[in-house]
Amino acid sequence: MRLAPLAPLVSALLLGACTSDRADTGTKPDPDEDGGLTLSLATVPTVLLASWTTAEPTLSVVTARFDGETRTFTEAEATTDHAVTLIGFPSLTDVTVEVTAEGDDASPYGSITTGPLPRWVPSLSFVADAPDAAEGGFTLVPTIFADSGGILVVDDAARVVWAWPVEADSMGLDDPPFRAVMSLDGTAVVFNQGAETLDKDGYIQRISLDGSEVTRIAVPTAHTDFVEYADDAYLALGWEEQTVDGRRFLGDTVREILPDGTQNVLWTVWDHYSPDLTRTYTQPYPEDAGLEDWSHINGISYDPVDDDLYITASFNDSVMRIDHATGGLEWTLSDTNGGDFARSEGPSRVLWPHSVQRTDEGITVFSRGNPGNPETCSWAVDLALDETAFEATETWRYTSPDCLLVTFLGGAARLPGGNTLITWTTSGRIDEVTPEGDVAWEISTPIGSAFGFSTRSPTFGM
Image (cartoon, rainbow, N blue to C red; front, side):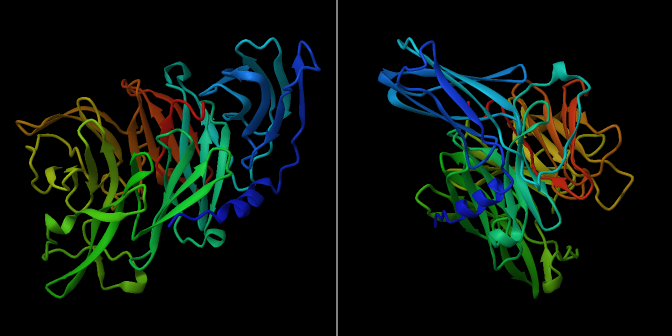
């Protein structure tokens, strides 16, 4: 199930334009001291590989400086043969590297220039209205083009520091990437690609930070979203077709993928709901016009505190909470189709939702709104939940000043410091918004491309 034939191909894609691998290294204060530093470019040419030796096992700190900035990397264990992957640098940038080793008089040092970005990486526009209010860190986001895409990691100045191509022709895949995250163990970037139709597989791919290791898991019918809930264990959305009263409907499942490769269907919407036969649902597949897209579940997240997962469903404008251990449906929150929570007065809280995240007070939800009405906007909302009285209280809402209406994907992620990272997918924009509703910064991609779900990593390989 785990395959790794893609590394040579992708290495060629990334390194084909790489012309800068200059490295000047030495040791100070004694240039003849054993263990001089060796620097080289990784498969991902903005990632540096540093190696050196010491006579005795030591625990070292590597300091990398560039353009007035510093990145610090600390070894996990003492050794004599040292190898550290250095990450977080823009392309074509001179980086000076110095090693400080415990009990070692010599400090290996050197310099190297990072390589160029691949040609497919789009030029990003960056506006920082309130940079002091931004939380910092690295944003992981897929870019989606007409027939391909790629994964980008950008720093807090919107400089691309890591890029990986996802091309339909070379990968043999039909759909673009949807979400990219830092692996839970901090050693890889993990992203998904959705199946195009019911008879195809979706994929979860894991790329080591230096690009040297590529693994790919085929997941039948997997689409749109996934989450890594434990090391190398995943939950992914999938499809299931059933016929009701002579009509064919497309419903959704949650598939679990375990580290040993075992897969099972943890939950299916068919166990809890049935299609409304008085309605006609959209038909997304031109080659199968008789298949109705019924439940349209499109976002998933995991709460490690309670071992629960949360999904968003467009068919009844709802968020659902599911017990991971049993696959049982714990509750449904909906403004338009019943559910367990009382409906409050005022505007809709959840309408065509596309992402949900558990917070200390309740949940953060991104709603696309009404894609058929160009006069409406999409929004992010915080809901405080009383899960005993089943009351949901809106505590925060954000709609972009220019009333962006997202017609595909879209998401909102609460950051540790209280800001919210909002992805306006089809508008090709990501905003970091403060609790006061101010935009700390925004990143835009050129016309003709879009962003998938964006996530934030406070550190990236450090």
